[in-house]
Image (tube, rainbow, N blue to C red; front, top):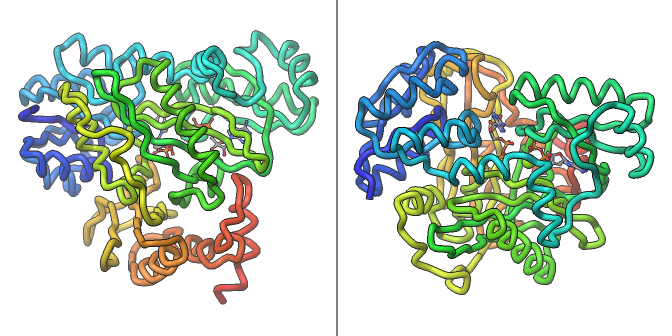
Length: 444
Ligand code: ADP
Ligand code: ADP
Ligand code: MG
């Protein structure tokens, strides 16, 4: 096993990884930006190294400084968390070159599966259904011609996109040119690659994703699904597992498709295969996330498998010690992402507790919420024997949480939880904005 791991991330996920390392007897090195000097992961880690200024490009995306920190501290491996460098093939290649183990798939896999056009082609070759669409477009004229064939509404999607960036919905041909150019520009700025393609825009679909774990010896298991349909601006807000409308038949097919996808990609480590599930029961691959997912804890709750620890073991060439038959998914788990809606100092913080309620966060009393990074400040996770009990538990936990000094989305999460459609499990990827406005009166 590794004796020391550097965590190239911040916030709740850095804390999550440090805890896993400690439980495994592995020493940890935190890297941080100036703004994060007094943060929880920096305090919890065995060693700490400042890698730059507040802008992510100066610190958490500063590949040279992070590699230097790993070499200086004799860390054998780097865990990239999610976001930042986690899906960056150049960074993984740099680690490989410097003899440091990147905890994730190798740089070639990151390159193929991180590119939506590539991964779509690969899925087509192996017979996993993809959303009808095109390959990378050469120009707006080609886009117009192909969009007319597919039919509106369509999506312009950046092949390098992530985190909801580089996606535009187009209802009519006259809006296509602007969408094409702005999606391309956004992706060029965010990911250094402005290539875009078209996908049919599916409505009334659910976002259902499958968690896989693949070791270095060709064993692949699937830990079931997560329903992440409740989104604002293409970003997930509340996730649950199992998916409320899943049937055994669809689950079996979707799990098989996810395992097939991982196998075809020569995938090693933890990964997530995302699908859109139509009311007919048909489902379509949209992308593979080649990293730890924000919502991984709900899968851990229902599978009793620690995904982060397995990421570390897999990177250390340890084979999975269980097979698909050993996995017994049970109960119901839910995660509410708690987002900051302002910056400020946390002058009072109370975190809910209770059996199978936990709050993954790096928040501390008197801590500062700075504007430089993602607005997600924590994840409230509950587990119960069934969905109804999980909803009640989440409601109690959300009511108990007190965060003073900044604005948050806690009230919105309660509104969602108490809405009739959510309680019935009736929702799709476009439901949340409506639920939040309609649900308004229920809380008053
Ligand atoms: P998940 O499916 O795990 O929720 P998200 O797409 O919401 O994944 O992204 C998780 C985190 O990573 C978010 O903080 C998001 O801003 C960030 N992120 C996602 N993709 C990228 C990317 N390509 N580059 C930088 N950050 C990203
Ligand atoms: P990202 O890399 O930013 O996560 P995705 O391709 O996973 O991008 O899409 C993000 C979200 O956008 C999905 O979860 C889904 O809600 C919506 N979406 C993506 N593709 C389609 C599509 N073809 N039709 C309808 N909605 C889509
Ligand atoms: Mg996605």
